Image (cartoon, rainbow, N blue to C red):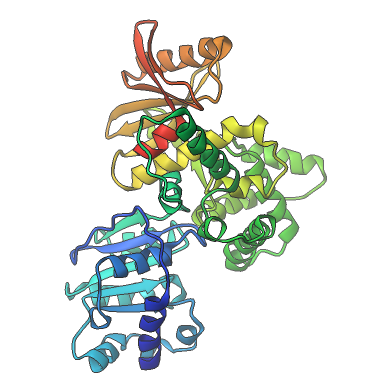
Length: 426
């Protein structure tokens, strides 16, 4: 264990870490739970914190529970890690980083024993949205703040490329930014994809298989792997649209594939839990009605969509834009900018893409639309204005590809903003 602690520090020193636009709270009064999809950069975000804060070896302790050296240790030795650190450095650590903590048996009691001393900044990471929140809700109730790490955002990719962007650009500068945006919508923001020349198709194929086998098949002891693969394809193909378990069940039944709805719901829960995708509920003033509504599904990265299923980029660009907007909003929700995201649909099935709720108030309505023409305006904007009146919301926004304006329609002011401008603002 002592050797691991020393070697880990040397490993971190030698790594080149890209700066993330993430702000973790620094407090000893709460545990910081860092969640995110596999390979999104959770571990590197902690390395970034270590380097940004210029933490010395004696200041922190880092355990990655997916490292073989730690997996081979018994629990009794692992819980002595503070004593080993003090033996090596003559003091207790100020920061404790526990990476992929779910791999430690009965991790909750270990973390609580550290937390109750109120001596350390404690950071946990996990690739599950529920295991941390569920366990913390029981044994560590009210003692945790959750931070979400997703693949690189568009703003982070611009920083990596050294692009300094202002809201006013020359035609050449704007074209360059739009080209980077198109590439972002095609390839997404997974660090391995952005920072290397890895074969994209192989990378995303392996990523999907990793989620299927590790997060669903192994975790839930599922035998019908072919069914899980079909379900994942249903989810990917439905990005930025409603997804009905009942319809999937009927489709499978028509193909003589025997499966229960309960099993399909378990698969959807597992995918959401692994942060492979997010399910967005329809807005209602009744919480129960909202929870029972048919959700829309968004994928954790647009590259995962383009390289995993048959898509036609130019035809699907509107849906890819919507997925990118959702991910931007999800980041802001976790940062506490507002309390919830929903979609809106009236009785005539006219839809508004996003309803942003803050407490009991509807804060903003957002429509995502690639091309603004007469027919689009007539259809999309009437729904937006109607929803604004019904939900008593005056902040109406349309995110476009390149149209920018401010117009009054049916007595309501609507702001239009290009996607690239919106993404660098949030």
